[in-house]
Image (cartoon, rainbow, N blue to C red; front, side, top):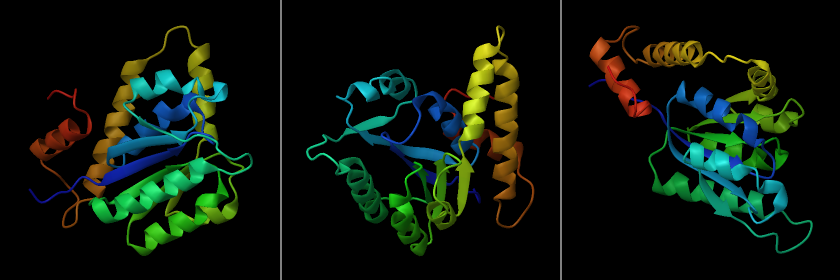
Length: 202
């Protein structure tokens, strides 16, 4: 087959991201490629991070525990950066998705791009400009917050419509990523969807 699904590592700053929008973020990433690695970093013994548990289980995200040994020092950032560099040399990835609004990851984004990898950032509208510009693409997560709030207001959600929109985005992105053509056989699209969405059936 002459097509390739992009493989991403999704690294989440648990101290700087919102659990209620993580599923929407992962859906967005699924339209761009396959999240082969999903990890979140933080001190999950802390009461403020207790709400992450359900979202991690539901979305198969691996938690990387980081104890706050020293007050004022961010062990989470250091662990995420070290893991990112380890993955750079030990895995054949096409890109990274960095979920954080913290400008401390600016240097990491620049270094990953120097290795010819795609870096997609996810953070709030208040994310400092240097980090946003260091990424190939930066997606403001405030829109996901608004979407989540609207979904809660609905008494009858429409998962089928959301599912169809997601599938269309994935298929269009897949076709646009073809190197030598702007079309794809149905068998290729079906294979891509099965790899990206295990429960998908043709």
